[in-house]
Image (cartoon, rainbow, N blue to C red; front, side, top):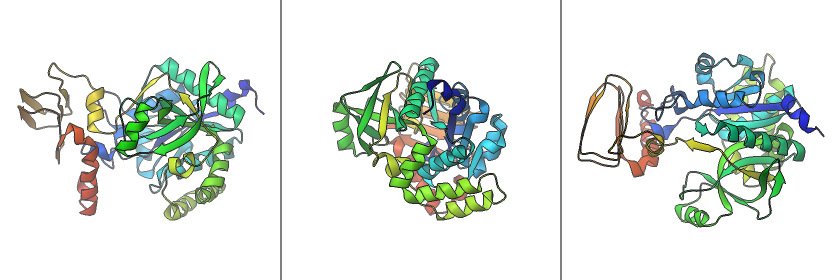
Length: 369
């Protein structure tokens, strides 16, 4: 077993950078997904993720799992080495992405501990972030378990996973760490409302952390198809057949999230309550909530020469490109104008913007995607 002083030599960060941000259409597109664009007046979330990763480990131990189409964008935005960028030829959800990352990193370091960072979260309270993540990394290193960061729910969100903590925590490095007794991914509104009233439930904030070997072992037990795929990629990584194997494996692999593939099934999952704050800007309502607002509670963003005329409109989000946008006597709207599209949606229905993207896909209107 490794000692505590060994962690710095074996700590890796894997940044997941494959999401499309369909609920943030029309600004988030296939070629410019939400992690690469400025939102709520903030720098691109991908840059923030790299910045946070460098607080935890050295640059050579930071990996990015991304869509193959984004490799050039990542290289232009960061100084990450090309060999640390894992290009997914197709979308296959998070289980294969995380398992493949673990397999590739394990090939380099059999004792690796991996912190998985989302590329589309904004994280504050840096000192708390580093303390929490180092504690969770040390815990999984010593216990060969899987762990995640949890946050107390503030409303019945149906887009998050929920975890139920056991009543008796373990004290570790000044943190209370709970074994997870129940994991429920994306519950119905009725179930989410019940969880909100029960103080043993947390949102799964993700930030999954594990030893590479522990995650691969869990996949072997609970998601054998994912495990086999990851091992094939591992064997080919760094060889002449790497790209050919990647394409073949991904073309045949099942698409399933790590939450459904492993988290809901394992009895070896632990939770560390977060002391740091995080925001997932997953839809326009969440962007509005995270933004600075004027006296009428409007959040206004200009990405070109666009102008806004506002007459007695309140609680809106307005994003302009080059056109004049005029609002008169409306409230709780999202209005997003780009070169080729205009979105108007009730802020409370922001989750449903994904339906627009699905419609465009069905009609093969790829120019708008």
